[in-house]
Length: 501
Ligand code: ATP
Image (cartoon, rainbow, N blue to C red; front, side, top):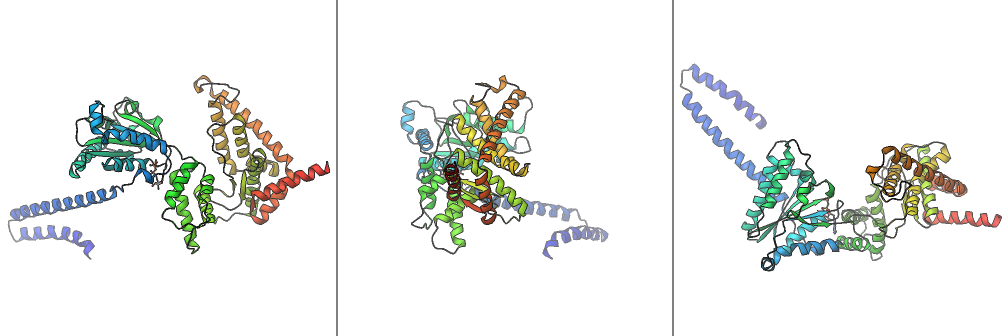
């Protein structure tokens, strides 16, 4: 009943007015008082709603302070950031040397590598108040709204620092590229105004000012940023926050293992090996998912097997119950064995497991043993990588005479590597700038490389036809084939080939 109160009131009021007019009562003073009462009621309601919303907002943004020790790896980034923060804590020294204050620090790097954590730790390290927001919050349809939000953010930072009696405030803007993207000139766009406001606020940061303001921004697309933001005096320091190396991964795993009951046999070092290329956020997810698997089994401790399954899950998504037909499963087995066989031949010992269990979008997968970390790749390494990617489609062609849509991602990967080879001057085009060559030239070279590697891949697979057949039977029956069993099959085949020769 109460939900219709408003409608009932709206219906009653005109009826009452008409009735009063009918009995010849002067309704003007009544209406006047009514309007004033309504206005007062409406105003107080708006105010209390606003306060509620503000309250909610400040709760959402309440920072959880954490220190640099809570961030795994990233030693170089932490060191550079700490140096950059000196001007906030060693104020007398910087004043003595007449050093102008740093206004902005830009953190760049892939998602989930700890950029937000670094900004929070910076606030804790310098005893500053911390305000976080994201570039997308400033993107509004209405001209001027984004700019006024930027103004408010800086104002808010100053006020909060004064209120909390802090000498400095750190403002963190994630995804700065949403507002700091390159301006295309010409028309005045909403984000032009927002960006201009940000530049104005940064220019307005004064060395004499207390509290001091420092802007830390993060992006994973630095090349998209407007050069005006990157010039000295604005984002004075740019720090790269890369994917962690093995030592960094181990450190991150240890941090996230702290509050978890791990079995004594768990080897975090091995886990750090197996998580090559993972970001901090993915490593955190591995520890978390591992704990969920252990809990599901009603165990007291988290074991190595739980964490291994968690790696698969984070890499390829949750095991799905997708029902596939036998024909489809057979084709997936052929496809995955194609990848595995090529991988094992070009990089002996590299296959850890071939599996037919569907995970995420994939219907099957090959798990590789951890690779040693390297930062430079030779031409032959890249060619081998392309051959492994093409192994799936080549096997399907040899076995069925045609290919399926299952190779889409493989081709994407192969094309990406070819593109890297071109940019690194590792193709027949030589050392080149893309502006010097036509699309046709690029396509011809791309086709040449991929055709040649496809035929080399086919040759490899044909040579090992027996092993392929034998492995396929095992896969069809058991759905998994371990790397060791796979290698034993290959070895047997070679031993018997030598003995018959
Ligand atoms: P994005 O660019 O997507 O905003 P980001 O680089 O800011 O990502 P964070 O938000 O800092 O990433 O990290 C996400 C989560 O991942 C953290 O809450 C933490 O649990 C974990 N994490 C990431 N990097 C690290 C690290 N170096 N040490 C410990 N935990 C980390």
